[in-house]
Image 1 (cartoon, rainbow, N blue to C red):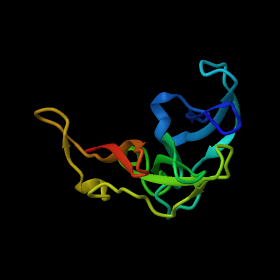
Image 2 (cartoon, helix red, strand yellow):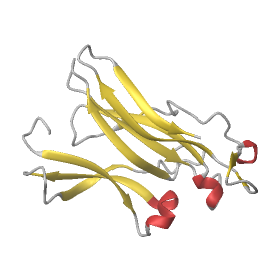
Image 3 (cartoon, one colour):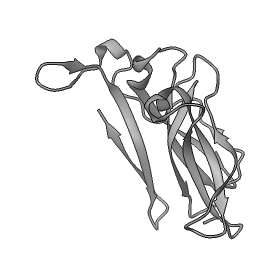
Image 4 (cartoon, rainbow, N blue to C red):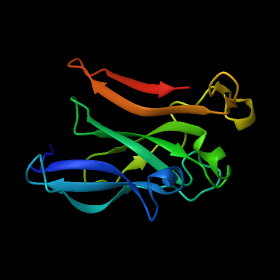
Length: 163
């Protein structure tokens, strides 16, 4: 719920592709509604890949989670970022990092930190191994699904999935 009396939702949108190619096209869009159950109307893009091939979030941003700090009117947007300019195809999906952007309003503008706040333990896709069953190793380096909580004392805890 925003300071403007409207309901805000930041959502991942698969820009010109389906769910199976989310890792090549996801952006985060901003939607608003006067009712918590909707309908919601997309009002703009909150965050998208930077387009800079050296950035961890060069091509894709996904899994938005927004919190408001209690001590000041500041929103934090946690998200995962991927660089499909550096890693191609499924290798891109296998290396994910968590980033954060901030804004004084849910309408933005969102200012992101230049580096991820959490990186996978390994970023070389050939060094990342998670067993894909008894016989087939699958290469994977992921920190994803950020979910932040603000406690009454103002501290923030971030939960996430990591493999």
